[in-house]
Image (cartoon, rainbow, N blue to C red):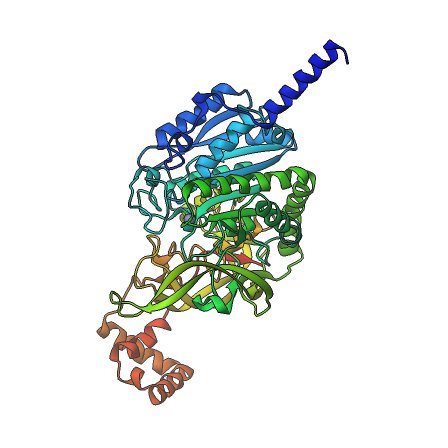
Length: 585
Ligand SMILES: [Zn+2]
């Protein structure tokens, strides 16, 4: 071997060693690292760090997508080797778009610190730069920015670090991870615009869990049920999840599906369920996109949780990197076929899923506990011993459809409900406006047995009800909104507008004024009219007498007896209890 060959060899060895163990310049050290993995940076420091990516790399661009109620900018970093920094440019590259959202519950902040480390490896030390050959990354460092700055040592009683952390909800006390459908928070409205504009091929939402003690560092949830396009659901169940579990385990982190015990009892097994669309992963399913919900275990040290979250990001990215063409095609099919299945072919649309009794056996890695009498609560208490155990328990991971509806061809919404329509549009739904008066054969819903919730939930008074269906010809004026269901977001449309859907606008109290009666009779006026009606209408007379004979509470209620006639008179409000949104079937 001559000297020059030896030199070349030494050079390559050194270069590859550098590649294997890159060290970033000191200026790129994060607060998480500098603090011996105990702290997480504040909003300003985080945004400065993300700004540095933009300055350091031609592939990174940071943009503001909204403003919080306290005036903080909501920022997103887009990373693209083609410098495709807008959604339109990004779509032209045919690369797979991943959206990572951190800090939707900003006390649960591992994803932010993990993103900083991972982006540094992509953009600065470049050992993971290869991701950019096939992927475009969108990273929201902190979604709930105001909550993040309500920082304290005392925000998460169950959680093992960081030293100080943000608060679960926004400055307006709204939980962003219950807001994906109703979109009351300005932060969520901004996020939905970002989401529907970019339509990421894969979505990651990063959290820390509460709940039982067990050995797992990481749990996860993904939609793979009938609430999701079936081909992508199969891909999640049979391809993505097996890979994720295998490689996260191989990286040294125990992983399991999200742990929720049946009836709260470990020995009864774990139940999986379809997330309602007010939650991130349930929402992504309605948008025909796979989503990975990460839940690190709150009792594990912050350091372990951050590195485990980073491994989750990387494992998900590795798999979609290797399957980019397949996932892009699945998403294309999900968009095209969902519209066809429900709007054109009229397949029953699943509005509600419930647990099935089917299960698989699952080896649960638990921490032993004993029950002792508590002198504080006066009840039995759980005391974890720290001892590990494995136990085979059932894992209920199937759902059945318990409520379906047939999609109409279109919905009509009167122009006065334009605020609702604005809320629909931010989900990426196309809404047309009728240019002239038009006649349609429509189906309307008339509500009955309406009950209002006792206390507000997420700032809204929710309702429960039944309804009757009324069919008829109506003429609607120019300016009426027309929403064709033959579009890619058909699942979102049905869940927002069909009253029986749990996250429909009407369930969230957006239409509560329609349940208020606004005009009333005086007794002495109604008396006269009732007598006249009885005289002129024999059928009505016998109906009234039958009711008197059979219904004691009616018989004893003078107001209801008069109201019986008011409701059957032409003076009664024909719009009372009628859903303003009409179906064209
Ligand atoms: Zn959370």
